[in-house]
Amino acid sequence: MVSGFSKILVCCDGSKYSEAALRRACDLAKKYSSQITLIHVVERTKKSDLLAGGEYTKILRKYAKSSLERAQKIARECGIEPKLVTKEGNIASEVIKFSKSDGTDLIVVGSKGLGAVLQFLLGSVSSKIANHSLCSVLIIK
Image (tube, rainbow, N blue to C red; front, side, top):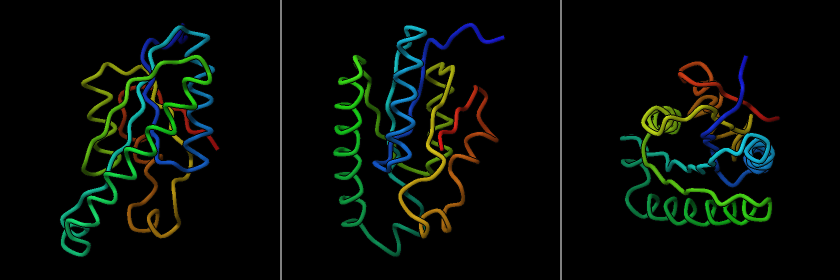
C-alpha cells in the first residue's frame, strides 16, 4: 500500500490535459507534503532536426520556457513552489530517465498532449511512460 509520495514529477506541455495533471499533482503534493518538479521535454529527433532545422528547435525551446512559466504560476496559486526542468530528446525517454535520476515516486501526466498530428508521429507519450517507468504513473483525462 502506498503511504505517500515524496517526489512528484509533472509532465507539462501547455495543453489542457497537462494543466489538469498539474492541478491533480498539486492536490496530492499538499496531501503528502511532496516536492513537485515540472518537466517539459523539447522533442528532438534526427528526423525533426533534419526536416525543421535549428529555427524550429529555437521556437520549441521558447515554447518550453513559457509553458513551464505558466505551469509554475498555476502551482504557486495552489500553494506549491515547484522545481522547473527542461530536457531535450525523446519525450517519454527523457521523462523516465529524469524520474530515475531524481528518485521520483510518482509521475503525473495528461492523457493527451498538444495535437493529433504530433501524437500520430510520436505515439502516445503517456502510454510509453506508463509502460516503461519504474515508479507509479498517474494519467489524467
